[in-house]
Length: 491
Ligand SMILES: Nc1ncnc2c1ncn2[C@@H]1O[C@H](COP(=O)(O)OP(=O)(O)OP(=O)(O)O)[C@@H](O)[C@H]1O
Ligand SMILES: O=P(O)(O)OC[C@H]1O[C@H](OP(=O)(O)OP(=O)(O)O)[C@H](O)[C@@H]1O
Ligand SMILES: O=C(O)c1cccnc1
Image (cartoon, rainbow, N blue to C red; front, top):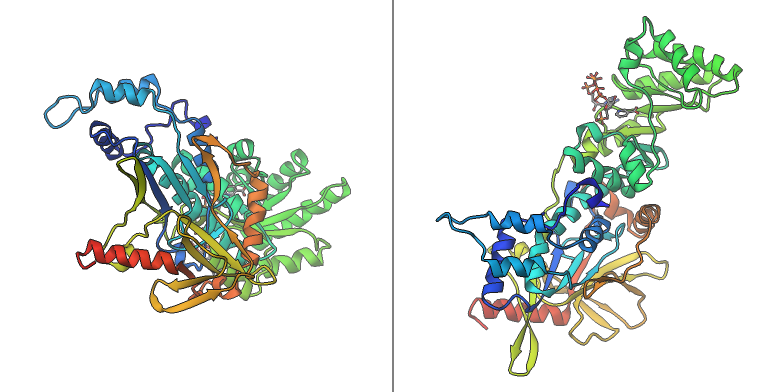
């Protein structure tokens, strides 16, 4: 899908330092060393209690087409170092030209609610390949997860109302607009105004009309009459160009004509002023005139907090048009996902064994977790999510397990063998071959709502949400502690 937007190979969509490190691995004969990297984030965006995983579909599309083209190699040949000499030698460029993607990838499916420090993607394979993928995978997963989370929050605020995504004009460029429309639909929007997103992703497209339509006629009534004549099956009038409530009266006048011709006045749209007051007044006018089923759309810099407030004020709005603050993730424009090395397979004579790796940091939250990680989500008897435990697949895990709270090691939870669970990471690629049956976009969207239903309401509230419990399985915790002590020279 992503490759369709650009008439070029996207295999150079990476930071230069990935290529220089790849060159380093190649020249030091370690390029093929098996490694495991994890992609995870450390903090929810928007002070949210949850994040929605999104972007895997792009990752799959990217990796299926992976391979440097002749033009890519020609370009790399032109790169020079500080001394003006070529950065890469011819042997390395030949190696890159023949490079095929052969990694194993496991991932948490799109539409799953996820939490800090859980690997959303686990990449295992030759270290050179894993390294090259750091930047594109982060690029795809960070942004789409951010927007899907914002949209899921809008859905929580709007409850059963319709949400239309109107963001394309304010989005961060062409691809930002496209991926935002996709992620917004997955997160819970019902339709987009972005027609290319409709075509490429199968998202329903919807819209009203702009002020310019009204302004291009001598008066508002004529503009509404003309619109209704041409598009009688798509009538939602923007009523605030001159005077909002007068606009509603004009909409009602044309609504009667539409009705006589067998059509309906589907809606009116408010785009300025006090949306609570105006929607209540508009609702009264519409009801009194016999249009109780005509919808009221509101737009104008909306976000989940304004929608919540408008609902508390009794606003009579049942369709929310949301643009700028959704597609730009206005209050937090990036998710800080990272990609960290967790293990390398070392040779010891004929034997090989995993050597676990971790990054220490002055800040405890920035210390990475080593190991071949999997996430086990424990459920209660009704299928509600109880807690997530990160464990190491290489360590023997019996069905009964103890989870340690990473912020307070004295806090432990025991799960007995009968406790239902689901392991979240599923195989996506094996040896570079896709082994995953991809759900369609509508199934992913439905999954978000199923997942949100599994979360305690406290985790979903906007103000000081409850922290969903995520911990390390005891053996992994002990291994991590031992490794920290060793790296600090105290082990
Ligand atoms: N009753 C309300 N309660 C809370 N927020 C509201 C209410 N009515 C409108 N808003 C929000 O307040 C902000 C109003 O912004 P602003 O003052 O720029 O709009 P406006 O002057 O009415 O319209 P515009 O400048 O776009 O023509 C918008 O984000 C809007 O969604
Ligand atoms: O407010 P947003 O959430 O971004 O939603 C999209 C906005 O785009 C349109 O207005 P436009 O930007 O053309 O002009 P306006 O701001 O003057 O209404 C529309 O009328 C909305 O107000
Ligand atoms: O269809 C609409 O009403 C619309 C589309 C894009 C931006 N604002 C509004």
